Amino acid sequence: MPTVAESTNLEDVFHVDILPALPHSAISLLQLSQKEEAGPADFAKPIEADPGLMGQVLRFVNSSYFGFSREIMSVPQAITLVGSRAIVNFALWNAVFSVIPNPKFGPFDLKALWQDSLRRAIFARKMGRVLRLEDSEDLFAGALLQDMAIPLLLKELPTEYEALVEKRAAEGKRLSGLEKEMFGWNHADAAAVLATRWNLPEEFVSLIAQHTEMEQLLELGKPARGAACVALASLLPSCSEEEWHEKDKFQSACERLTGMNIEQLTDCLNEVDEQTAEFAPLLKLPIPEQSIVSFIKTE
Image (cartoon, rainbow, N blue to C red; front, side, top):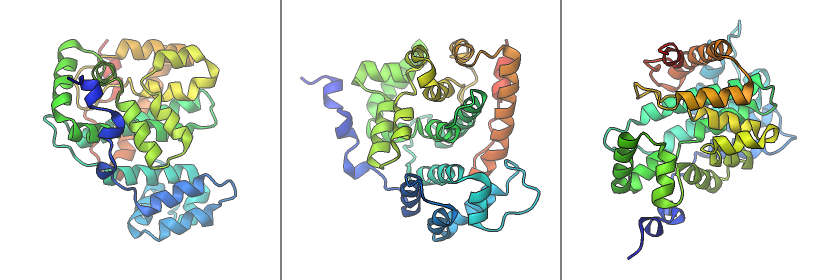
């Protein structure tokens, strides 16, 4: 009789038939992002060929999130002002957001997942900037996409995940650890498979795959600081939960990674909360009812 792990091989779970295809515009932008010689005019072409994406990009650049004093009217100008990486990552978010299905799984709320993803992405980028890392925009994308496989897993393995969700509620353990116990892999591995099949850049795949390995990344030190920022973001409270179960672990890891004291951390989290409130409406998401700072202040 095969075990649960033997009967749920990840490659079999993510068979070709269930994988959604990314929009052509997103694929073109990702391919361009791998070419050093590509400039604003090159990135503008696939965006301008997709009227829906073009409108979203211009709304994004003209939002209070960037705070430009005059309206940006063209895509090339937008790319010149905010950078191709920010635009590509925004387009990638829109693409993934549009193709991942709602699994209709018990209490699961797809919009809450995207709220969490957005907040974590903004936080990971902020930590990258605090540490003065060059790849802060990549950290944004890595944190944004770290949980993107969860809806597909819930849809494909509803019985197994019902047991996992019940066990998580009863024991207070991380979902990734329970997944490893049951399957031998977790949703980080699944998201990395999905990212690989979509031909996303290798740096994104690596950030996504390692986001549940906080302790190992901290032990690796300076070379792994970017990945550690993404892993740290995964410890933030969920927008759909009233309790922050991993607050102590988060604060300890944050101090080890950045050296920030509680006052400095609170200031950073305030900024993340403000940017999330500005950014969420652009993606047609509700602003989280409870800020991250409110969890800190309940101590």
